[in-house]
Amino acid sequence: MNLRIIKSGVLDTVQDMGRYGSRYLGINPGGAMDKYAARIANSLVMNEPDAAVIEFHFPASAVFFEQPALIAVSGADFSPYVNGEPVPSLQPILLSKYSILQFERVIKGARGYLGIYGGMNIQPWLNSYSANLKIGIDGYLGKPLQANDEIGIQTVDAFTALLNTKEFIVLPWKADASWDNTANEEIKILPGPEWDRLDRNSQTKLLNESFTINNQSDRMGYQLSGPPLIQQSNDEMISSAVTFGTVQLLPDGQLIILMADHQATGGYPRIANVISAHHSRLAQARPGEKFQFVLSNQQEAEELFLKQENHLGHLRNACRFRLEQLLGSF
Amino acid sequence: MNYEPTYRIFPLGDAAITIDFGSIIDEQINKKILAGFHQLQKDPLPAMIEAVPAYSSLTVYYDLAVLKKIIPGEKILYDWMKEQLEKRDPASWDENNQPARIVKVPVCYENEFAPDIAQLASYNNIGVEEVIALHVSASYRVYMLGFLPGFAYMGPVKEHIQMPRKLRPAKVAAGSVGIAGNQTGIYPLASPGGWHIIGRTPLRLFDAGKQDPTLLKAGDTVQFYSIATHEFENY
Image (cartoon, rainbow over all chains, first blue to last red; front, side, top):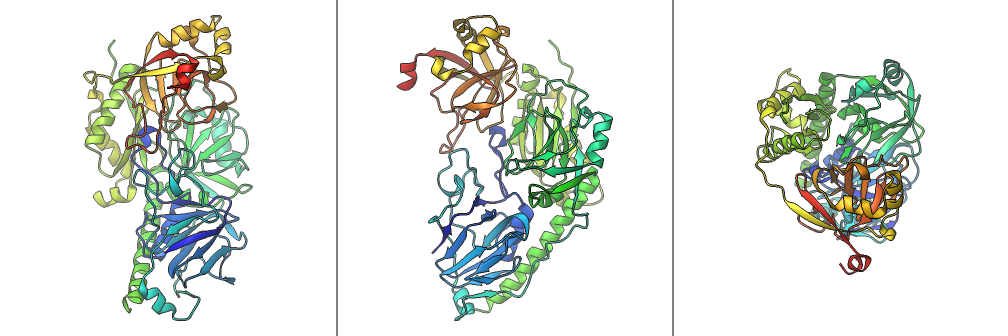
């Protein structure tokens, strides 16, 4: 009972909430770029938040299901189709056996997530289902998904009974993914440990001018194009910890924002950190998009994160309630 | 030498906190960091996800949602974590009694594995043989792992084999032994890198298939020794 990739995407990988506890060995946590969206996909199919999902970029894989399955798509909207018919994101979808999920075009966002009821039958590495493509892990956690890859998934009898003769059913409830009313082009930051290395003028520029994500951006980090910033101190830095969202100042005065596959430690000045609650919007930004940094504070950053968590918690409970009712009737 | 137990605690974003003993490469300070790290591994702070030791700093990553359940109310969670860290009495962290594990690392310094050794020698106005002799003549402390899985930051190397890192990173093979400033390190995986490569070890520094995937750990002592090309090939 498998899903099979029948057409390779440009970069589709198995991910989860990240690999923790090994950073002291230089092993970076990785994980989904947009963990918020990945958790919504898992909620919609009644999985635990850290179940394995497929993260896809555009052009995305086409996926064939050998058996009935319950799936949900979240994150970027790449116009999903099942068996040639358009289906919505953010709604659970019951698929009959031999269904094909495809993505047609980019409507919004940078990476999408496919959640599958019961998760995927994959051997975790160091307690995580996050693919790391560079370090020689065996199996699906060491490579992008390619045509003919097969991953074991779960089916339950209720799916077949509910489907009856239908090819697929879009279940009639939709996750509300919006929780934040910050303007779209704003990214909130906290001053980083080396904030004071920027001269006053550069601090002003950082907060008043806009920055563009350039083409040298990937799962490791986003390089930004903007006004060159100047350091007051050229003292050599020694390596220390960094995190998802750390904004580093490169020697040429440009910035890089560290994303999911960032190295465990770094040696460039950490002038700021994007607040956790805005990692998701950052993960959905594409090269060419512009945004502005807005200075936040510890209290606001924590409150926004907890607000996002609350939203996810309610969503998870609501999804579970509905699905249990539906599946329980069989 | 006596060190003042002074440190700074600051946030790294909204879900991590760092304690820093001075942004310098210093064995005594690094021992303090590792002592604090080992203490936290045994007895983690509430809501701690993991801790990461570096040269002179220790960073604790924590889960805000878990923390909020422990301390409801209005208090800023970072402030609470800072208090918890201070309660661990960082000034008293000490690991001088912990014997270092010694790891002997064979290195082939022949030209085919050492693309930058001639340049490093001429930068320092010494011969290639002297570079090798100086590199194997000292033992090095592993201060921290980072950059790549299993990449050990070691040092200090003797003055006559120091050289600032390259301006542009070059392609580096797995096992390559490099020098940057007064540090030496080994690339566990093929990667772009800015260190000057003076040799290569046949040892595997990182193996994802192993229970314990890295050969080296922070706090280890490394001794390099020179091997010939045929020894490298038959290792």
